[in-house]
Structures are given as C-alpha cells and as structure tokens.
Amino acid sequence: MKDLDRLNQLTESHGELRPGHGMISGVIALSLAILCFLGVLAFHFPEYLTTPQLRKSYNVDVMRQLMLGALVLAGSISLYNIIRGRARWLALGAFTLIALTLALGGHKVPVNDFADGTPYIGLDWFILDLLGSTLIFIFIEKLFALRKHQPVFRPEWQTDFHHFIVNHMIVGFVLLATNLLVHKLFGWAANDGVRGWVQNLNFFVAVFLIVLVADLVQYWTHRAYHEVPLLWRLHAVHHSVKSMDWLAGSRQHILELIITRTLVLAPIYVLGFSKEVIDAYIIIVGFQAVFNHANVSVRLGPLRYVIVTPNFHHWHHSQDDAALDKNYAAHFAFLDHLFGTAVKSDREWPERYGVLGDYVPNGFLRQLAFPFRWKG
Image 1 (cartoon, one colour):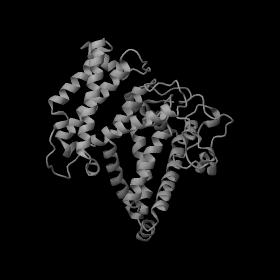
Image 2: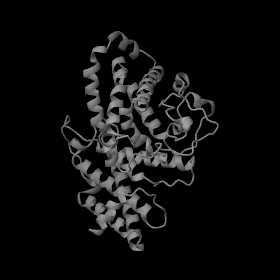
Image 3: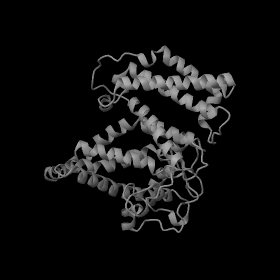
C-alpha cells in the first residue's frame, strides 16, 4: 500500500526529477514496462486494440523484437535499482508489470486471423507514437538545446504526460467523430468541379495548398481563442505550460482539440484532397506541432519569416507584453506578418512562458475542469 501511495504521488507531483536517486531510470523502466504490458494486450486483442491502417504498415516480427528489447532493458534497469536499493518501490512496480507481461505471453503471443470492422482503440498507434516521439525529440533537444540545463523530466512533466496519454489515446475517436461531423455539416459545400481541379494538382503543389488552407483556418481559429473570452477559457490550458519542450504541445483541452480539428478538416474535405496529400499533411502537422514547442535553439535565418519555427512559436507562449496575442500561425509565419500579428522584439528568445497571473491550476483533471470553473 505504501509503494502504491508513492506511485500515486509520483504521477501527481509537479517537480523535476534529478539524477542519482534511481527515479529517472525507474520512470524509464516503468514506462517501458507499461508499454510492453499494453503491447501484449494488443497482441491478444488486435481487432479491438490496434488501428486498421497501421496493421498494413508495420511488420509484426519487428514489433515483437522491439517488445523483447524493451522488456530486457526495463528488467535490467529494475533489477539494478532493486539490488542497489535505488527507488526500490518504483523498480518493484516496473518488475511486477514485466512479470505480468511475460505471464501473458510476452512478445511470443500468436496473432491469428481476426475480423475487420470492429470498434477499436488505437493502442498500437499510442505505443509507437510515444516511443517514436520520445526517442526522436529528446535526441534533437539534447543535440540543439536552447536551455541546456532544463532536465527531460522538468517541472509539470506529469501534467503534460497525462494530456499526451488522453489526447493521443482518443485521437482515433476524435478523428472519426470530427470526420462524421464535417461530412454532416459541410457535405453540401462539396463541388465536383473544384474537387476535380484539386485532385489533378501536382502532389507537391497540393501539399503546399492543403497546408496553406489548413493554416489559414488554424490562424483565425487560434486568434479567436485569444480574442473571444469564452474560447480563451479553453486555450488558457495550453498556454499555462511554463517550460517549453516536445511534451509541452500535448497540453491541450480536449474540447479545443475537437473544435480545432473539425474546423480544419472541413475545408480539406470540401476541397477534396487525395488520401496521399492528406497523409502528407498529417505528417507535417504532427511534426511541427511537437517540434515547434521543443527545447531547441533553431531559427532558420531568413526562412523564419516564411516557416513557423520553435523560435517563432516560443514567442507565442511568452509572457512578454510585446508577445501577447501574437504569432498565431502553425505552419507559415508569413501569415502573421501579413495580418500584422507577428512579434517584434530586439531579443532572440523570450525569457518566461505561461499565462500572465499564473491562474491555471496544475494537474490534468483540474485543467480539464478549469474552463467550467474559472470566474475570471
């Protein structure tokens, strides 16, 4: 019971984790153990826990080897910490999950034929997304760090990790719901002539156009979140993050996620972009949404006036008076220069992030309820 209380405290704490006590390695081992446990469940129930589109894209044998490697790594870290007496309660938690995963068959669970068309949760997408994002962006942050002394497990990382889990776990449901909503609300606007013209465009021209159209919608939607008090209640949650890194972009109220996705998907559907072009857009928006929040010192010279960079978006999160309600674009920085909302500052980077007054509470559940309780 005492160990369980410590685990609960770890998930709710908002302080940074420092090396030398087994906490950082313990969290890594526990995270890998959790992902392995989720992975073995996906092997047992692929029809309900895996994404149909992803099943055709990856090799199951490779996934098995990845799980085996994660089990060995997590087990080795946990065993070392148990022997050395470093955060033993955390290591035991990871070790217990590893044992349970192995008891359920581990990486050797056979995957037989199963029916298509069943309702599903994209557990495989979540596992691959978390692993891929963590490995890629932490590597980039360490290579091109803006704030070199900012730890990976910085203050409030737990809150943003909870947002990551919820928003990414239900992204399949959100996309399905928003697609249905878009078809119902905007189906009348579809024009076969326009669609034919769009579908005959060169692939790269079509990708540029879809990103431009999406960013125009994103710009004005984002601006509305700042200028309409009722919408700011939702968006303030995203701005409450005080340390910028790859995980910070995940802090987003679920209602804002649904509203924004619906509005961005509407013109994309109406204009009739091909699946290949939409897939390319999803890759671009997925990368930029994470990269532009990352703790990286990237400005791109004159290109920063054209493309949104981490420098450009960091200013959007700044508490500086000159940066308030500025830099709304998600992809093309020239939109803010065109509409007169680009930040103008003599300094290269902002000093402080977050909401002026710091009135948004910490913690995922408190932030979920915040827009409906805030009396400001």
